[in-house]
Length: 265
Image 1 (spheres, rainbow, N blue to C red):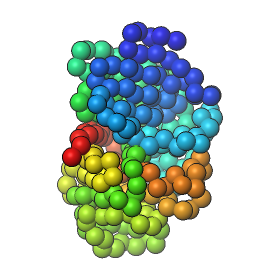
Image 2: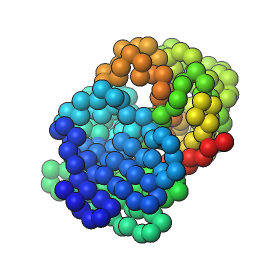
Image 3: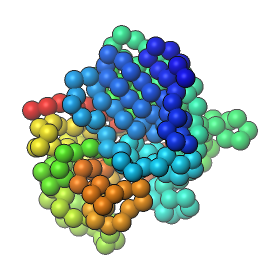
Image 4: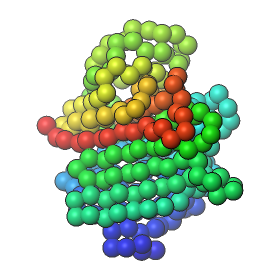
């Protein structure tokens, strides 16, 4: 279904998806979870984000890839893990198309029609995502970004701190920075520097992730651990660098955001 000349609505199995095609690039956003699935800026040879090639797109099931929004909690502290927002249908509540940028706004409402949260996405030379919490209770939030890489063994993450909380061991540990992933990793860093970089040697590209109003960065790759909706080889071409507010939850009207820039070298 065409919304206008730059936006259309398609169905990916059971999931309705907004498709954007514009001079600045192309993007896909699932209405379930207001989840950005794909962004390929103009001139880019590959997508910036990773999406599982075996994702079944089943309604009510978490989508493996893109930028899931973990809200109003992070991790398995309650069920479902990472909160309910990524499993619920959001509404495309506003959009604006200009010659040099596209703005899309998605809103989440409760059963009484009262707004709970809003996500604004701006696509131009960079991709900007801003999540705003409108619930009365404080809430955790994380933008669980899956980035696509050519080969995880030839990729490094720069500008991370040298200490993190290792969720696999339950301990704080010292870690190298820059960091190369060569095994399962699930680490929470306290934000020290606003920008993180993924340097992909094989594709000769750098992805800069600017964390905004965040408290933590989460680094995740399951390696060979069996993971739902991920193939045995899936871990070789992805890396999660997540923008989070965990220890200092969002209060009513507060936002967390990320700006993602892409360049080649």
